[in-house]
Length: 478
Image (cartoon, rainbow, N blue to C red; front, side, top):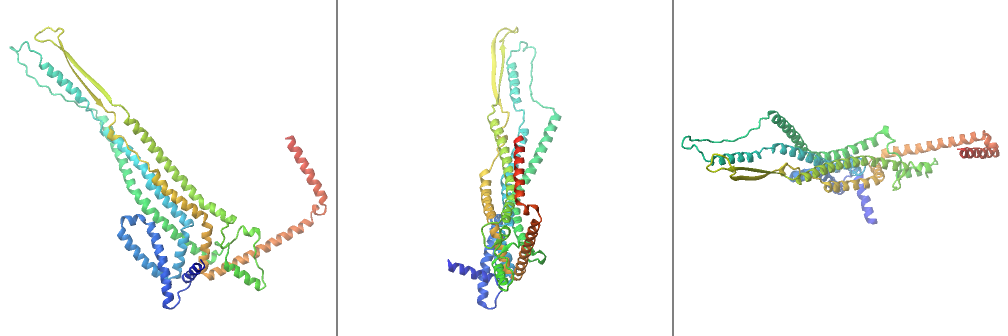
């Protein structure tokens, strides 16, 4: 364990220090930078996972090219090494939180929102199918009945067949002349088809947004946040930025001041311990607990939004599924058609002769089975991924204060001259604060000598007792 710690310390010192002359130090530094570059490339590759799946050859070639370029850049530039180290730490802070929230939003877009639009599209297609399937095919049965009557009439005897010859032909057809209804149906159909096309275009766009754009935005957030952190830390006008940590360099500086006969600020009093943190420390101060609470606020807000979209998706699915189930169980309309007549063979005068009848029946479905919508709901596929993302967010939220301490340590290692100015400022600030507190306490003590209670404590005690008795009496009357 000790050897591993020594090796890690040696590697870190090589990574932080300026490049030394000579071939051996250069090879050691290049090996370290190549490893860090490989980890960075793999991280970016995971962020662009969808590109890797769709274009594996192109993604691997670009990753190899990026690995080589980044290795050379890390070996050449100390600032780039600092940026990459902070990039990995930023993945666990607000920037990483924003990236994970963006990834969670992408999962909801690719899962629940896509399911919502898919179910709406199914509903629109169902209405269109019902409009298109509204035909009057059942009228063909009535046409067959009329033809049967005609055929039966042809079988009747003709008493004047020697005098008159009858030759006829029957053509039966039907037409529905309701132009207004047809125009309204066509207008409704076109409107539903337009909505269907819009939903289809949104469905085609959502996977691209959820799997490509949002992860890319998350990575950009981390890079931008890392750049802004370095800029604010190095700015001479912003020396107060994150300057609440007692590092090892601060302890050395305070010891030097003490040896020179100057005032020391250590140990910190109780009020200062609530504000300033000794690095490393896993115990959070009151201020750090507030920061942790603020860390989880966007997570809770987005969790409520994700839950809302899931609830809308489920309610729409349940509604369409219930309607589809009732439509499937809806009975068909059964029609019985019966035709008959009395046959008077070889007689001109009608009498009660033989009854000839024809019976037929047919079913008319109120809804075509192909037009019934079939919704879908992907709860497990979405919330398994969201559960993993939420687990990472909880872990990162609990480790946020520790990661901030590591970022301060990294910046102090790469920029010791800036760290020296920050330490001097913090040391002076603590001394000024303590001197102000001493003056306030002295004034309070001097003012207390001028009060009546200081010289007559018994009188003060009697007044206090009488006031308590009066308050008790008032409470009793109430």
